[in-house]
Image 1: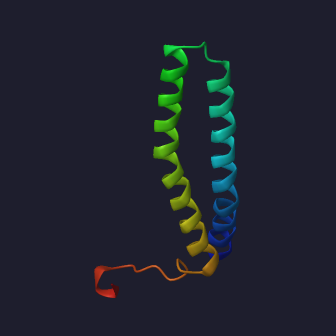
Image 2 (image 1 turned 90 degrees about the vertical axis):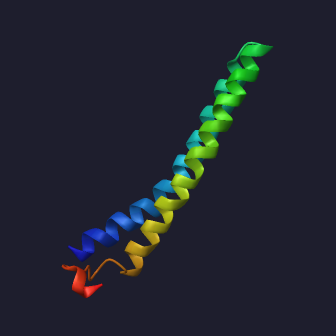
Length: 83
């Protein structure tokens, strides 16, 4: 089970920056294809909000992955007495 946790941790470390890069690529594509004027402004605002929300989530995924690779989750408490 610990090997699976470490494998998933490594996957999260790799996946987090890939997701951020993919979001930036999608944002630039959608903003570039938007019509000039208010439509472009609305698209820019929407993607700015999306990026502001999801970049910290991806950072959190990378942090969880780092903890998994380091083995921080190898011994999980089974009761509140172990905390």
